[in-house]
Image 1 (cartoon, helix red, strand yellow):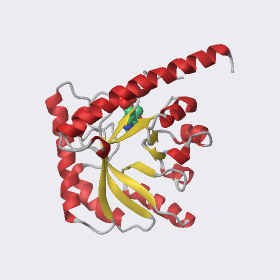
Image 2 (spheres, rainbow, N blue to C red):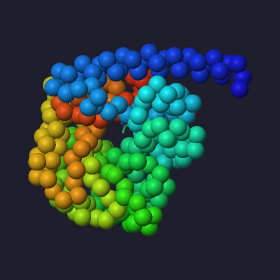
Image 3 (cartoon, protein in one colour):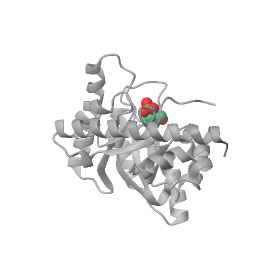
Image 4 (cartoon, rainbow, N blue to C red):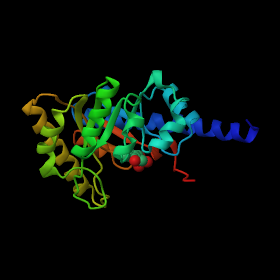
Length: 244
Ligand SMILES: *Cc1c(COP(=O)(O)O)cnc(C)c1O
C-alpha cells in the first residue's frame, strides 16, 4: 500500500462517516414523519464501483445491508466482503445464465422481473438445496428502457412465481422514472405502496410482503414518506461514482 493510496482511503472513510450520519438523520426524520420508527427502515448501501475496503468500512460503521448491480463486480469483492456482518443483495439486471453465480451466495435477489428468471432461480436453488429470497421488480413508470414487470401483470406473475419451489417472494422493488416534479415522483412511490399493501392484505401462500425497496440518493426521503422500508443509497453515502 502506498502512502498516497492510504491517504485516499482515509479520506474516503471520513466521507462515509459524515455522509452516513446525515443519511441516518434523514431516514429517522422521514420514518417518524410517516408514523414509523427509524429502525423500521433498512439502509442498503449500493456499492457499485466502490472499493471493498470502503464498503467494509461502512459495514464497520453499522451498515447491515449492501447491494451490488453486477455479477462480476460482486464476485470480485465477495471473498473480501465482511459478509458475516451484513446481508448481501443483488439489485441489478440479471441474466438467466448468471443465476448460478448468485444462488447460495447472496441473501436476496431484488431484481426479479420475469417468470423465466424466477424459474431459473428456482431450479438452481433446488439443486443447491436452498431457498432464495427475492423481490419482484416493478416497472412502475412503464418505461421501455427499464426492466421490471408492468403493474397490470404483477398479480399474475406473482401467482406463477410464488408456487415455484426454492423461492420465497419477500416484497417489491422499483426504480421510478427520473422526475423533475416531486409530486409526480411521489405518485409513483405511492402507487407502489398501494400495490404492496393490497398484495400483503391478500395473504397469498408463499408471498410475504415484507420489503418495499424503493428510493435512492436523490429521493429516499420521499420514498420513505410514501411507505418504503428499504432504501438503496449509493452516491450520497460513498460520493460520486468514478466509472473506470
Ligand atoms: C446505483 C443504484 C442505486 C443507488 O443509486 P444512487 O443514486 O447512487 O443512490 C440504487 N438502486 C440500484 C438498482 C442501483 O443500481
